[in-house]
Length: 123
Image (cartoon, rainbow, N blue to C red; front, side):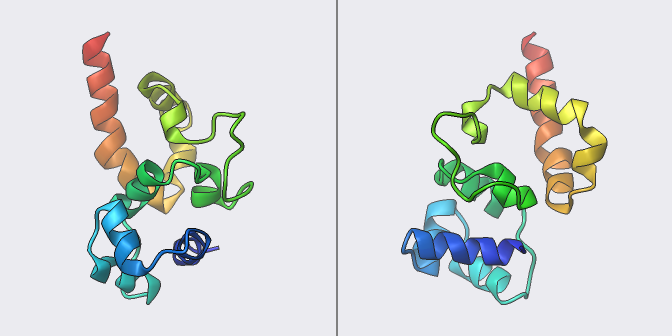
């Protein structure tokens, strides 16, 4: 399922309009509209906005079509459930796998490298 379909599922589940969804994740309503109308691809700002603002959204569903849209409350499923160290180690140990996922390649280049450096500086 494409990310635009997942955004539609999120809008429907939370009974949100595109404008409120855009405000909640920190992008413009035009950006959401463009993604939903295939005028542009969802960037890392949308993905991070979804994960940061919809804590019960399962990242495995969002990125890979695995499992259900909502994570079980008893298991670690949201990025916020993991420490920065756990996230960095997971990414580092599976770098080649993550680089094959288009949405992750931008995240890895922009965010993960900065987080890894930050973590290493704090060790």
